[in-house]
Amino acid sequence: MIPYGRQQIDAADIAAVIDTLQSDFLTQGPKVPAFEQAVARQCQARFAVAMNSATSALHLACLALQVGPGDRVWTSPISFVASANCAVYCGADVDFVDVDASTGLMDPAQLAIKLEQAATTNTLPKVLIPVHLAGHSCDMQRIAALCQPYNIRIIEDASHAIGGYYQHRPVGCCQYSDITVFSFHPVKIITSAEGGMALCNDPALDNQLRLLRSHGITRDAADMTEASHGPWYYQQIGLGFNYRITDLQAALGLSQLDRLQQFVHQRIKATELYQQLLQDLPVELPAPAVDGVSAWHLYIVRMHQPAKRLQVFESLRAAGIGVNVHYIPIHTQPYYQKLGFDWGQFPDAEQFYSQIISLPLFAGITPAQQQQVADALRLACSEL
Ligand SMILES: *Cc1c(COP(=O)(O)O)cnc(C)c1O
Image (cartoon, rainbow, N blue to C red; front, side):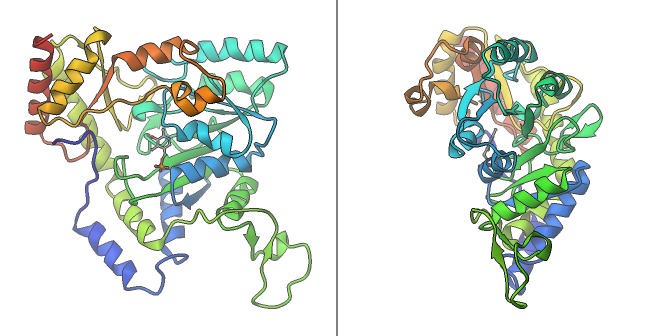
């Protein structure tokens, strides 16, 4: 089976992990801040806080922005469930902004209408979480301009997008957001096995994220409410979690980061080849990113005939092509239906969902594998 995505591990990655295994620190050592500083530098952000997953980073990003019961958080229905769950963890109410049915990205025009309506009914969100689906940045300048009059804070779910650019600056620089979150799950652009990171430019947010990552405990006298009892002293000043990443993972992530540009370049090259191989098939190919460079986490094609999607999907799987679907609209998940959502609420997301298939795309995919994917898709379409 050619998977839809997979990691690329080389000898340097293996050596980096072994080195750390033989060092004094398996966790809470020097590799974590080294990884954080390297990602912050790469992305032109002041601060980066590494965690055990992007899900954890999204949760703490919401908490750092003081999302709590009674607050509203809006995200995209076309995402992994973690983009919405993070708000539910905080006791907030989730809602969704429909997408552009041709890209699956949050639609600024629909955001504008929804904000106007929410302003009249006093139901504006505290935080908006746009999702950079497939590695393409959302139209952040417009989204930020729409949120600014209402003082809505923004978390970019950039789980797919490390290595991408928007308006000539790296995704993660937080020019149009408060916090940006990356995922380092093995299918993503670079991996630390499990792992995530939250980037920001505000020292107070950085401090909050660090506190929340490790039990709400501080060793910084400036944050303490009474004088230190001695060198052993720490204070728990809030309720935090253990969302720390290990040094083994950070060592892997740091080693992978060296090849970030190479990985994205390989992904871009692979999309160019798909463009040639697939151009005459009855599928809509993904458009390039608007106003930037996509990190190309996913290659999502749209069937002209949604009714045939299942048959084509099954035919591709039977041919050993590990296709997938990104994503089932979050509002249609049973858990979200129990919260009151239902089919029909976000029609563009539902239309997008009905058409899409993610073809295999990863840094190490070979032209021969891509030819195999194209041949299988051609055959599947001809059987319709
Ligand atoms: C992968 C992913 C997440 C969750 O990432 P983890 O690191 O697995 O927790 C969140 N949002 C999106 C859009 C993702 O693709």
